[in-house]
Image (cartoon, rainbow, N blue to C red; front, top):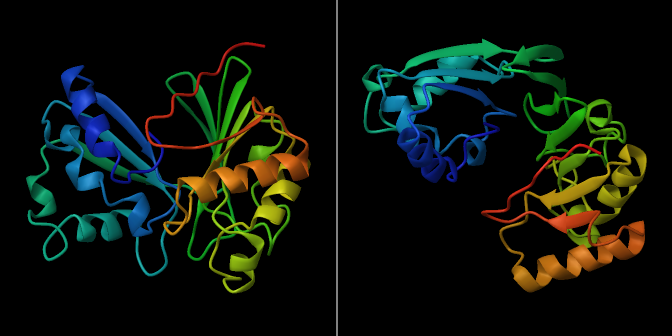
Length: 235
């Protein structure tokens, strides 16, 4: 699993129904929109389930301290000790390791607070996950995991006009996204981390603009949305 926003509630139900007994969760960072679903992940309450949580060491404490504090009163109705699963915490930064046949690479990216990007590789198929990144302040941020990926999910939150008022907030403008895609050259890219003020029409407009500027076709650049299925096939 990659991050734990509200969507993991439905995922947790599905995993519980399939009687999944081991979960590896890779967190990019600890901003609320990336962890707020964690307490509603059904396997966290399954005594037969093992949950391993990976993520960056946050400022002012450990990964375990910050997450167990969030998953306890007054922020959560139950104390962390009431979670029945066997839960462990693993701090990573610039690392490479194996998870059940996947090679996972993590690197820091430009975003307020310690934040990671991930690349997952299996049988020469690669997937890069960079939902929060500000390449306007660091053009090469995350490129070592994004470069040449079969599928890249990347931050695409702002128009250029919006970004001018939000420099340093940790997200990409449309122009910076297009430049980043030119630099990274993924086979397929998905625009994610949409601004909450952007409705469907606005997102479609941004997609059309990004395709026009980058020269990417429909099969090469698309919008991320809830329920989207992505399949990595062998070339």
